[in-house]
Length: 186
Image (cartoon, rainbow, N blue to C red):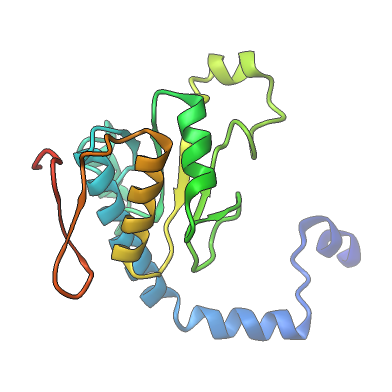
């Protein structure tokens, strides 16, 4: 009976996996703090450039207040819509620092298109019935330097045609993102 439960639920860790779990738990809070802070910056960037962003930690989210009552942080997973499937595909393929994957819970930043990847097996008409946009891009924000992530995302957005080429990144003297020229202020 025990073997069946372990095998069916995947709860039987090897000694090495148990050690990795114990080691990782020690830094979980620090990693989550960094990931959430990075996610908030990415959301601000995307919203300032007019994208429809889905993130419960955003004041623009319809259930922001509910999320605030139920959670101590905004999380590190968000999604946004571009309005065009082709543009979304080019954005995902154009990033250099964001890994293309549907995995969650790691420390590196990931990018995916659910309708082309994790939800591709769901028929298109059912995705439409459930209001899952075909152009949706999902980001799992990691612990990398947030300015590096934003610069990479910005470059991919411009190259994909999601942002006008005239909007240039303003950098301070050490190469860090200082401000976004042409972005509406929040």
